[in-house]
Image 1 (tube, one colour):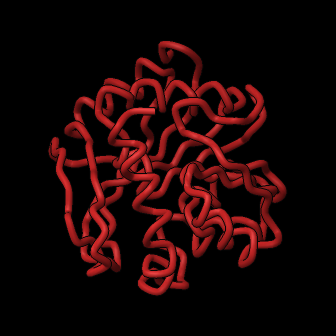
Image 2: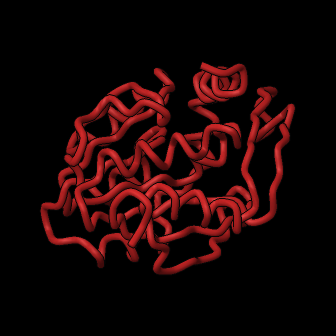
Length: 207
């Protein structure tokens, strides 16, 4: 695990309760874009699920959901608060699930913490676990940026982010076999604004 990913994991462990207190209980409206693309009962992987609310919880009402996160403390909260979903500890660069086993992957505010050099590996993992024709809904970066906030959420804990510009992300998605179908800009309740992409997995190299 790289130093940055280890620092992000440790930060989410340390501020688990602060993060839970400051997140909204309402699922972002953009999640409807994923739900509308799926049949009831579809298998969904929530990659970087955190404490499971609100995204995993909202998905679990209609779908068979597995949440994966590398923060032990976040998963402890998720297992308490979202009993309808299953959870596993793991890293997005090596997901602990079988290939071709999901109809959709969502990744809300998680890929943007991964070092830019490893984004290709993350999207390749999303492609690996998706069935052909599967759907991806992911937060991405708009303009390229890497940096840290030494006192995120007034918690005294440093958090780090890293993402390329959206054009480079589109190229990475295409190389992994994804075709972007839509892009949305979402205002987060923590004061950030990020684009989301909705993409269809068409197979290695696109088509």
